[in-house]
Length: 236
Image 1: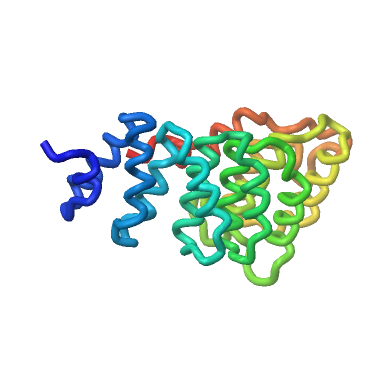
Image 2: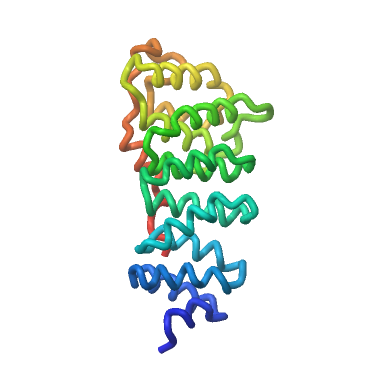
């Protein structure tokens, strides 16, 4: 049987994909092969390797993912894949890296950084994430989720609220009052699917809800579970 190194470089897609799974199962040795493969695989396969580094084990993966995420000359797809993979691998330990990506000029990368924070981040990027939500809600054009027939993690508003809502300071707290006020003041900037989702997930925040100081925080674990499915599951 061909070695893992050979199969990762095999021209047949099914052999390559099988090797990715085997590399994850092979622990640190498999992760080392994945990192090494980035040096000579076709660019078309790099994103797949980066994505499975989120499921691998070892010491080389997080460092590689951090390098990719912070490298401005790297492709958008690579950096976005690295953001999610790093969140999966490092959990709250990826928060500082994701917060830095949240300040990137690329809006798509910002969205992936927010997804990572929503699924795994600690509260250290709360202020940056709140600024990002304000930018999304106040931009010109149609509501961000207008074209969504049903809500998914494709909604940058939903991922921002999942992150911000997981790290509130209780009813009447400064963060809670700010977030409720922002949502209510820009309710008409939300798409219908986002409004329905918010009404179900956090009914207190809707415009006709109780005074902002009396609104209870949303269920953080439920928000986290929603945003993590299926992005934080195994790649293969």
